[in-house]
Amino acid sequence: MRKIDFIGIGAPKCATSWLNYCLFEHPEVYIPYKDIELNYFTRHKNNNWKSEYDLKGIRGFYEYFKKADKEKIIGEMSVLYLYKEIAEIIKKHFPDVKILVSLRNPIDRAFSFYKKRMNKSLSQKEYFKRYFKELANIHLNYDNNYYKQLKPYFDLFPRKNIKIIFFEDIQKNPKKSIKETYRFLGVDENFVPPSLYKRVNVSRETTHGPLEKFYIYSYKLSRSLGSYTKYFLKRNLKFDRVAPFIDRKFVGNKTLKKEKISIEPEVKKMLKKEYLPDIIKLEKLIKKDLSSWKK
Image (cartoon, rainbow, N blue to C red; front, side, top):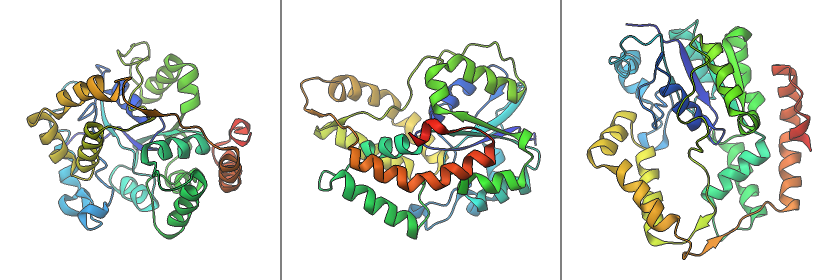
């Protein structure tokens, strides 16, 4: 079995899909899928809180890389690995692996999540109050307390093995961001991926249409399945071909009513109060000024 060279650990809504595309397209990099995250070590509620790792062990993980050939490095980009128990599993099996993590202003990220999951029966304020209450009781994949999530990785892995990529930097200069990422991984940094300037998995404004609701429901259902099952459905039911058609025909149809969503000042103030303590600790952990997140 070839050694795993890198693992992406998150976070969702932080340009991780874009990173996955750019890595997949590099000729010296092998990633199992371009548009599906493995999340192999993540325990899911829909699977009785068991992960693929719990069910298949580490050999099942290596199965995803059996088609790797002459690529210089192999690895994967997942978004749901920001947990202490997963950090320990990764350290156990891949002690020298390089870790990739993408972060974003937690307020912007929380609001991006809100736009995707918006419940029209709740105000923004009530939505986030409920959101924080849930976070206090259970582990959620969209927890924005990065210090708490990253500290186990910095405790287990040398700092030189961890690369933090900022969503805001990708927006400003995607070429520089991917070049630095390629350099960190030890592959040709001058390669220009076709998806360099492509926006991937963008949160849209809310669109009210029955076909889009069906599309979203189908997508959420596929996300709850195992990685191989998702891959099978996508390839054999041609879901990847149907989705763009629905996007063009209905989601992007200007005749449908769209609701423009903006963050309310009171909600922004509440989010800032919630995340500021963690941001301050994160600055010390990663040794970076995050003043722009505090404004």
